[in-house]
Image (cartoon, rainbow over all chains, first blue to last red; front, side):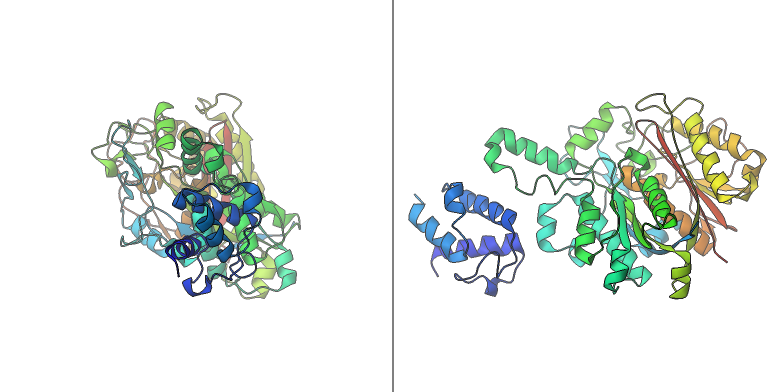
Length: 78
Length: 419
């Protein structure tokens, strides 16, 4: 796993209180990890903080899996 | 009218993270007071409080026991304490495995006086320093007072009354009284009722200090600072925690062979119509609440064995005492009365519920908890058994619990042993 993927996974584990082995790149925040829409807002804020990227609302709405988040951050971080 | 009994208890207090530890420490005369550790209080006028102790303390609180990790991150401490105390009470009552039909007839009335002040403070700073886009999406529902009730009903699937009282320091007592009436009126068969508070944060301490309500003269002697009825009392000590009881319709509780602690027989409530923080100087509102509770219970002035007083360790202590004297008259000579705020501080919206549980345990064990630090009783206390310094074994069949709050709000609860 890339460094970004590792750090994304760590944030997801911490925020959602899920087992680390469930946080695969394919895992859906809502369907697999028990998140609700507000949890995703919070996660996006945490990603912005950790990676110094800005994730606008329209982009955030398209982030539904752990892999989506990793991909967006890798493409946009400075 | 349907009868209402108490069948489960739950406590998170500065003296323990469960009922039996708290009670044993209280009866042993221990104090939960100390220097504030939750934040750096060195610039505050008051630097002491009765904090719920951390997990590694001999009687510390472990939030992981009953509250999901994710919820812990989203909500204020008062909600975490409340969820835990509600879980304890349900376990104690043997009601963790209910049918859907029973869950539809089970509700919650768990309130708070102030609610999520620490979170409001943190997010307010966040807003100003970093902008609106950094405010937590869980900010609102993680601070709201009715979110103990909300969280508990979601966790256990309860679909009965979803209620939360906000009456400052009488919240806990009103919560129990209102919930008992909901069962009496057939709105529910089972109610979890109580209160919680956690405002040991910079804004909470500063606010009560500026209102001249806190003790600020004994920062170097925290365990001696809460001293109800003592001539040298000088303001309350902030406490935190939660108390929740399971109330149940009597016939139902009897039929399932439940352990019945007590019956809620009297509830009185009134307003002072006088001042926002000071009680009526003659305790007129307090008197009305107590008289109403006695009347509802059908008891006479000599029938009360133990009074858990509001007794915050402020000038108001003797006003309450004068009102009690008028209500009970000669009957007071056979009663014992103490303020357990001397040991656990003032839990504000949690106080009435925690103290109601102490009243119930006094009936269970036939022992009344002490008023700590009462070395020099103030004028007007002559001839009244204020249980100074050490707990006292005695007969306890009927108890009166008083709670009064800012805004001139008063609640009195009477509970009795069920034979």
